[in-house]
Amino acid sequence: MPTQDMRDEMREVVADIVRLIHPEKIILFSQKHSLQGEMVSFKLCVVADCADKAQTERQLYLEIDSPVPFDVVLYTPEEFAQLKALRGTFASKVRAKGKVLYEA
Image (cartoon, rainbow, N blue to C red; front, side, top):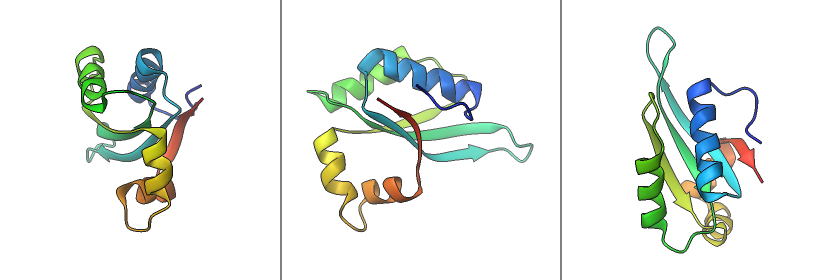
């Protein structure tokens, strides 16, 4: 289940990702806000078992309609497990500083 402290736009994107590809985990690792405090974009790390990551990313961008721009970085569970343990990798930064929004 998505966590309760998300903005509605982000909650909808997370729910759509869960519905489309059934990920193991979704982690928020960046969000930008305007000077007025409105969220203007966000970035998610998605850990999901998929045969073709490029095709899965295309599917997400084509099938999810969001009023707030978002980016997705997709890892397979094996990739994320290996890379999050290596200091200096993007996955290790996501693990250390990101916020888990969904976990199966």
